[in-house]
Length: 520
Image 1: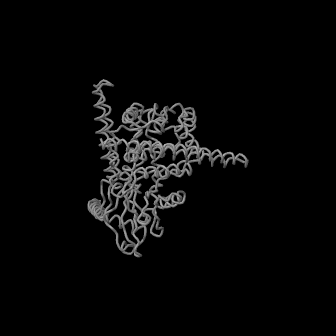
Image 2 (image 1 turned 90 degrees about the vertical axis):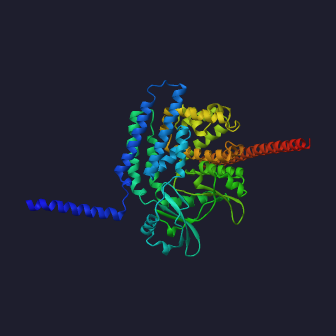
Image 3 (image 1 turned 180 degrees about the vertical axis):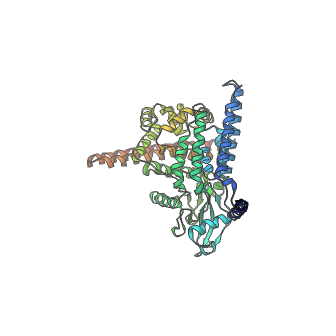
């Protein structure tokens, strides 16, 4: 018996020693352990919740002191959330980026703080990159490429991109998934779900479970790079008539679920006005073409690229044709719109543009908004209810209106959460896409331009006519639909010509006035 007891410490020592050697060889980062990640997330959630529960106890609601204090709590809570995302990385950064785009839902302190996550994504080491490529492609880097740039061109929440040169001399971009993301993502989403349920228990008005549901559905798709490659080829074919659009060609022989090799295309980010100015790129042309592209994706095809943040949308002058091009990257997240949803959404935008308030109510209700249709119209357009009633295509966006929108977002947070839990799931990604596109337009100073509404209307007219023709059994009825479509498009073109002539006359008057002023 004594001999057996003596063997126990020896056995324990051997186990600990072998475990230590194993962990050392694996270079295990303890911060990546599920328990540590959960503890970090739980602690952050607890601190933020405690802050909101205790800070306002001795302050009267609605006073200047209350609003000033609330802004400070929002700011420090947003910073804590940002730090959590940066520490846990992967799925946390992806969800944090999504939250940063929710201008219609979250206070400005949150969105402005979380937006930096697009530029603060972690980088995997070169050893980790080589390991993923070796495991997935079965060869060493030197066997696949004559050159592989160690410093990534860009790093995102799920992957990073390296420039490389093939043995035949072609330059490619190699997108490599961070090695731990696949393993951690499902656990991270479970952690978020548990913590959000706890937050909902403490603050019943906050119901962010729709965010978890979206992450559950979309993360597996985004983590499969073969899916991304197929999406890029589909959208390239659907929008082949847009000569300004460039989608990098996929090298399928060097692509797997975790490695995607594609044609290397350089350009400046779509929100970089200085780059455009330096390269002679017309900002208005870019904004108009971006609107055309997305209108066609949404209203005509129902196949929508849902991650158009500036890092995924580049612009350049084509080296051969010297024409301006938009380069669309990162095709992992697409929303396929059901036909009924797409047609109702199309009708809703037509009603919004044409100031048809009965149509706005009708199609908002069909899309699940119910009695919250005024709020839904405001969330969808990022305009005030007064602007929606006056016509979003005729009333310019003002700074005071933007302030009103942000203020109301904080006041109506429970109702907005209720709305987001009501509408079809496919609407959530469209709202995110709308917000990202609006952010680009705001930076380019082209938001709510007449050309964007005209292009949207043109797409809606064509999509609705095509749908009606597909449902009609009568040749006479199909001809009638086609003639109505032609007339509506002609009328829209006449309106566009009128606006162009009006703008040209205004510019001429201004030049004449400027000339006469300089002479005097």
